[in-house]
Length: 222
Length: 186
Image (spheres, one colour):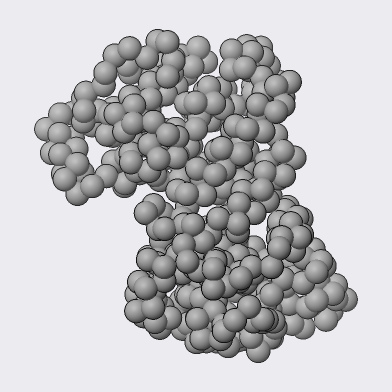
C-alpha cells in the first residue's frame, strides 16, 4: 500500500472493478447493479472502470507468448527429476481423486459441450488420459518429443460440433502433438510431423486437415 | 468447467503423467508468462521463470488439494518466483519512482504516438503504475480473479485487496492527468 492510500472507498465503488470483470458473487452483483441503476454519477465512474478493463486486457494481450523453447526447458528439467512413485504421489490428491472417480470423461465432455471448442479438445485429451492410462508407462503419440522445437507445424481450430471422441481419435490417428494453445481464437499449434517437411508436403497435410469434417480451420505455420 | 478440467490434469500430473503436464502448460503458460513479465519487465527472465513455475507445479501436484482454482495456485507460485528473482537481481529491479521518472522523460516516437489517443494513453499509464498496483490491476481485469482469489495470490486481507485496487485506480487517474487527460475522477 502506498503512503498516500489513506481514504477508504465506498463499498459499492470498491466493487466496480470486479463487477466489470464478472467475478462478484450474485449477492454483490445485485447490490452493484441496483446502485448503478439509481446513481448516474456511479454509472459514469463505472464507464471509466470498463475502459480500464479493456485497456488492461489489450496491454496484456500485446505482450505475446513465451517461445516454444520455454516448454523444452521445462521438460528438460522434468526429465532430470527423480522417477515418481504413482502410489505415493497420489496420496495428496485423494480428495480430488475420489471426486474425479465419479466423473467420467464423457460427462466432462458433455458438461463442456456448450463451451468453447478449446474445451472439447481438452476433454479429448483428458479422455485419453482417463481411458488409456494405467501405470507410469503410458506413452501416446502426443507425448513430447526429445526436441520440442523440431518438426512441422500447423494451426488448427476444431469444428464446433466436433465431439470428444472425434478429437481424441483425430489426434491419435494422425500422431499429432499439441505444442501451444488454445489462443483466444481457439487455435492450437499442432506438430504434424516429427521433422521439418518440404513446403509442398506440409501444404498437402494442411489440405487434408482442411478437408477433415472435424477441423474448421487449418494453416501451415512455423 | 475450467477448474474441473484443470483438476483432472492435476491429479494426472500427481501420478507423473507428462501428457497431462503438457496439456496444463498449453492451457496456462501464456497467461502465467504475461503475469510474470508484467512484474519483472524482462522477457528473458520471464521465460526462465515460466519453466520454474511449471516445474514447481510438477513437483507439488500431489500436494494440491483443490481448495483454490489451479490458475490461482499457479499465479501464487509465479508471483513468488518473480519477486524472488527481482530480489536476486537488485540492479534489474528499478524502483518505481525511477521507472516513472524515466518514462516521464521518454518522449520517443512510440510514446509520442501513444499520446495521440485515449486508449493508448491509458495503456501508457497502466505501464507506469507501481509493481504493486500493476499486479492487482492485472489480476482483477486480465486474470479475472475475485477478491478472495487476489487475497490468496497476493497474501493480503480481502479488505486490503479492495482498497489497494481503489488506490491503483486513483493513481491511474493521476498519471493520466500528468499525461494531459482529466478523467473527472476522483
